[in-house]
Image (cartoon, rainbow, N blue to C red; front, side, top):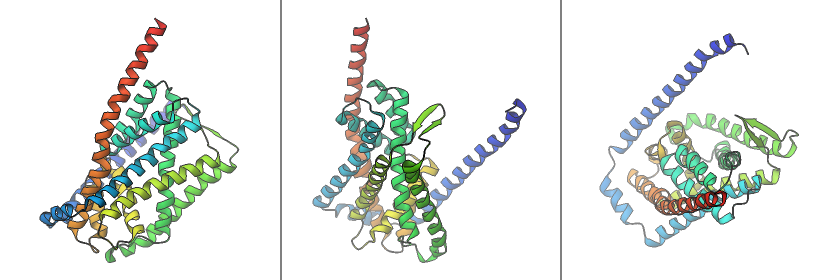
Length: 326
């Protein structure tokens, strides 16, 4: 490509970048307005009463679901271990992945998903290219599971939309069909593609075998299902589980679009908008507050302790390397 061609592309890239930022800002403002309009009439006294009404047994069950979900997500990196063949032990891989997931949930993907994963793994002796391949396996597992679940829920219209939103059901169904098509295309490529190696920004990505891809799909779908199960447990009885799952999937994408750490406010806005015609706002907010405490804050507390231990182990390893080479 000639220099003049590159110069002509620069204004186009700049325009797209500003358009993306503008769309994100508009979406963020709309979510804030929607959240304010829905929550201003909430009886916060009733929210507190609902929170106090959760039994210790129910909260214990919620904690169990949280442990199971975090364990499943951490297992993504075990697939990465199998994919790359690195020599770190499985328990250490699970600890690193758990810490990264907890920080990712609360502080955003750039902190937990990327920076912390690279820091911890490289301090434990893995190369940057190996960490990149582990990250790729983890990301694909998460979003492959998402696409399969969202595609199924949306395609079969399992998400109960409010009466005023029914006009969007057909569009959501088309999105679901597209998500399923993408998912099956990836699985088909893992099975039949002759080209197994791809290069992305200087990194070599090897298309995994079908068995590993199916494990990605299974673990990804299991994690999203467990997250929805926790919210379902905290909501009043009688809810339709696929609807709760579908709303969680929609709110997660909305959180990614707005780049808000932990999707703070976005999750609440989407659930209030799509469930307020079925149950009281106070019950929805109480369930989501308990969900954040169990799924976000409690694991983060544990992850901070584990992170300090991993950092200590990393420093010890560095000192040993220096003494050996000295």
